[in-house]
Length: 154
Image (cartoon, rainbow, N blue to C red; front, top):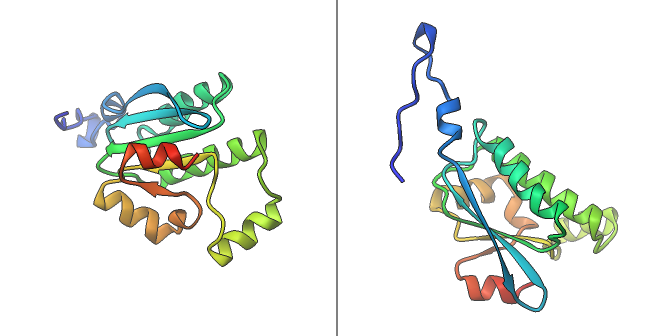
């Protein structure tokens, strides 16, 4: 995938809508202990694309997906908007299939013992891993670097 420079709007400001079209999702289901929906993302998850990302994954959830693996190997950058989308997905999956109470989850996150059983990440780039680490997301969403290991964790 090659990066494109956004078209300019009046006043010389870039048109970031053009960048939204670059983010693509490819969804498949892998058979593990449970069916796992694998969402392969291509392109940044940022303010221009997070709504499309969120809508695409929510479509799978609405179709019955309860275990979701987000493949970030083709995602150079995740912004705060992308982190918000991940948090929305985490909460949506927890609402549909509660694993522990909110209080138990908060305590587990603080103690370092809670990881989401429903949402996991595969192959985040170095920049994305840094973002996940500095924001604390890796405290409750597991990251994997191989598909087999990620699938086995569900």
